[in-house]
Length: 384
Image: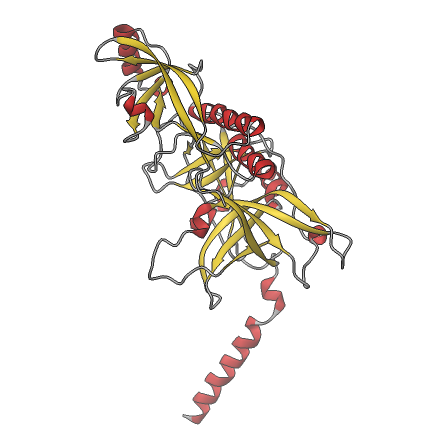
């Protein structure tokens, strides 16, 4: 019996020593954390493309007081903040874009969020502080905080990616993520021919044919075949597994906050989809019965909104939205944000200020078209 116990003890000792052997942790020996990545990124050219963006991809964790990781998402490096200090000539801080969900506390039974950690590709961990959030677009801009251990990011493996404008429908893209162990993950898919609002009624999202790489892929970059970041990926928890917010929309929001400390978004109170995305037989009916070839179908009107008071109803078709007729919903959103940016550049008044949008609204039941001037308020929408 004593001999058996001695053998067991010796076996445990040897196993413990083997586990600490650094040779067991070499990339030539270990298995990848996410085996599905190999299925979606297999060719040398695809691997080179993904790696060209990889140093722009970080992990963002919300952390409880006891150090427990509450949630893990992905972030994108979108800029730098070079700050002069008395003690150092220059300190470089990275600005990280991620999902606003990293700050949400969905479950009251879970620990409260105490801090944010930003985990870099080389497993360096930095603290993150919130610069601003926007709940409508589900984005948060963070900045790395300096410490005595890693005060300067110039020697750390981060780089600013190149940005595209908007992804195109049916375009093949990669959705990238970084796990909480700093492991890189990727999925490949296409932008679907689909433009309905998501579960929360947001119009500007485009939907992906693939899932994002696990829960932590929420907030990661969507990359085209030129290596440009064209959007940020979200887990929608809806009929389509994932969606992306266009890079052009994100960059406009960041520009607004950087220059004016707020985001001015025209809140028109309408959930829309386009005639262009209708099923083809229904498109034919719209053309033959109503002479409608393009426009925006009203799926919902916000209760108590100016649009409701002016008589815009569910199933109406906006055939001209301030002169726009054939824009996709993401491009319509960019147009509305451009109005907000112009407003911020031209005035110092508060967020109750309005702008008038000229609409041509077709009623398919009454078969009539009328002109409506819709006053729209500029909303900050939960900016910090």
